Image 1 (cartoon, rainbow, N blue to C red):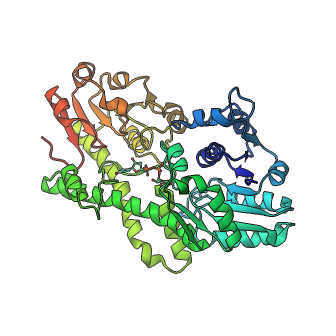
Image 2: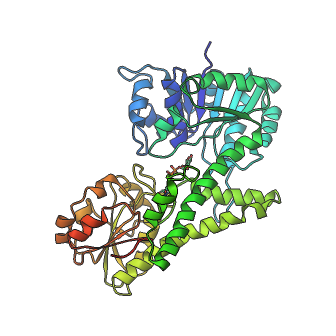
Image 3: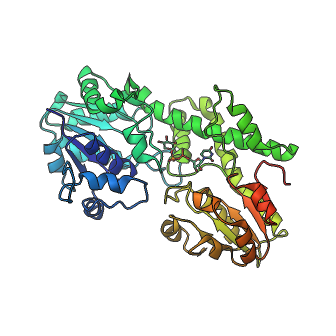
Length: 446
Ligand code: UDX
């Protein structure tokens, strides 16, 4: 019989994983400790913007018209322990307040709640991004706490989904990585992932530490690639070169590749920044900090981008933001997401506000979160509204909506037609033809 699946923690990762498991044909029970989340998910509603996720939930959540009924949600640990053969742990591992290290308290609490209730054979599968060594520690915890003893195994199965593509990445992953200690765990996970593997997703079996490291190494590599191209943008600016052309040209070399070479105001979000910091902290604990000193540079190049955008804007408005109106297009850390965690766009808006600029922000999906995080900024209901009377317009998150703005019409509402493209994503020629000064990072001015 197919294993029954539970998913513990129903944030981005958990809600998507639960819906995807139901889509693959499994009976799934999702748990969260926040009752409001469970109530929403039981109506196939998600507390965040993620394309395709609500539709996928609606196809499977029990009790909804026309659904498969394979997906249910609960707040009861007892119910989860009784129901599941495979328990996926998908809780958050944020950066610790004021430190680089990762906060493991949610993962630890989840395992501490579940393990004492496991009275029959089960597989606990960690998906959260954790410091290397966590899986071995959690395996010891389970062995001590679970009444079924050695019948309960642990596997580590990192998740590589991107926000905005969470459903696609979960149903059609680039690879599936499983860190296991025994053949039984591998067999169960091969059964769980039979469909994507059958469709061509490679299945990589390894030990615990390697599985944990694959995730942090992948995110570190991506962050490094972005900071590399942003470092090239700094040099291009000094030498009057064009970083977009440079990226295109080096990207033709397949060993380098075209992806993740978009220069701009840098990376943000709930993963890359905190993951590279937690990785450095963990390497330090292991006595391997020298191996990762380059990540400190990756981080500082990245943070410098935000300051540089603020400088460009200040220069554009004549050297001081006092009394100047600044329009900010974009608040989320990337398009197709409503996530503003560590968002470069919101950070730039905030810095300008603190320096006395009158900042008005518009974002297609991130307004609610932005208002909550930064209530002192002004917000507008549309891009033209945000631009009204502005001395400079900053394009900071590359939503498709901003690419279809009409530069001629927008020219009429601003005080001064100055555009700074922090994402190198707008059509420079079209904006210049409409009378704007268009400036992008790492590219020649005219
Ligand atoms: C990332 C990883 O891609 C994913 O595999 C992992 O599971 C979680 O972390 P995500 O945080 O959703 O996913 O965003 P991603 O698409 O990687 O973008 C991260 C940041 O880098 C964004 O702020 C984006 O704007 C920026 N970025 C990306 C660039 O500045 N330039 C690029 O070329 C690519």
